[in-house]
Length: 110
Image 1 (cartoon, rainbow, N blue to C red):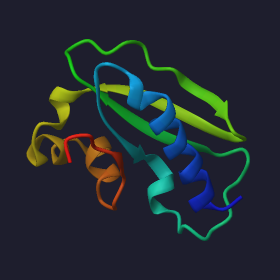
Image 2: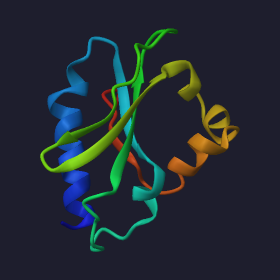
Image 3: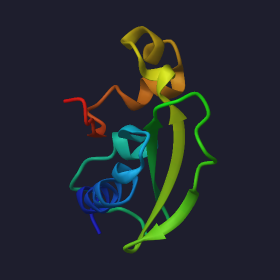
Image 4: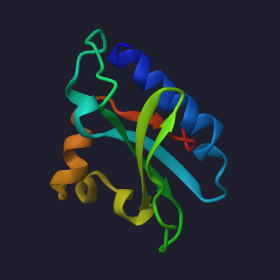
């Protein structure tokens, strides 16, 4: 499987599952998937890290790692207050790194 194929599987999960959550605010790739070329081989033992941004101050427990269509997804739920401005995102090195490349999967606000 190639990186682009693993990303597409992750996108499908976001659209089919996470995007249906009533408090869904957005989703993005985080972690090493952002630094891998789309045409590179994607190891079956690697995971795709996904940040799911939810409206409200108390997101539910994150699902963590699970297998979806032969790809290991590692999903974290995050509170939308952390994403209200570029300054907030860039002031946190964990989040800032995820946005150094185009990583947004779904942004219902446009």
